[in-house]
Length: 299
Image (cartoon, rainbow, N blue to C red; front, side, top):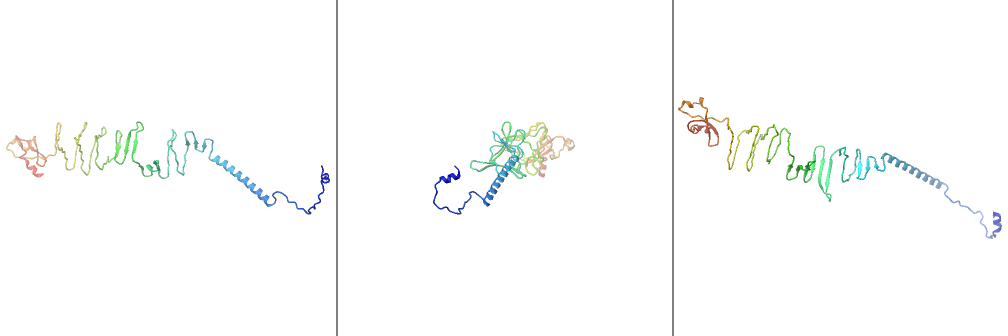
């Protein structure tokens, strides 16, 4: 049906038609249309830039299926290779190095390792600084790698050294501010054992005796003033083939016998003064200590 046939077949409407009817177009036109195109273009450029930046970050950080960069995610945990820096706290259960390389913790200042209990309280701390290594804990132990026995332990009450041999290589030796308790003091083979107190006294005490033995050498005790050998309940026993007391003063007494002159005197008698001083007196038929006791007056 053509337009003319549709008009003829349609009944005529007697209603008056409005003249000069205005037609309003449908859509976005003018400046609104230009703004819409501008925003769409800006969104497209932003998406392209974001996609390019994402691809660049993935490329720079070396993201792979196993991880990114030097960080690899494995079944046993996270594996980190190379030098890494952590700007914030790191919480891990265990830190291991590779079998063929050491584990190095490095800092521009101090390296501190803290241990806390379930309440968050600090129970142990190890600080490695430029001047010292400090450990704060209730008990510090160093154990052997083979059998796990304690080589060194320290707490508030005592310090224990469990090594088979304690060696002090300083030129001044070992300095103890107070008493030293030990069952045995021995020097190394072919070395001398020397116990010395330069400005004070040297005292060795034991409830059941003190034994000093030099199996292959000499035993020598020297002092500046007095040497005391004291036994409160027992006796002092000197057992040797020869006992020599050098630099003892020699007393003299008058005798009518010409054979007792000092030029031919070879035998002497050991005498003791009331104050304990020893001296020699020319030997005679009987004791001559009383005859030459004037030497006790000098002391």
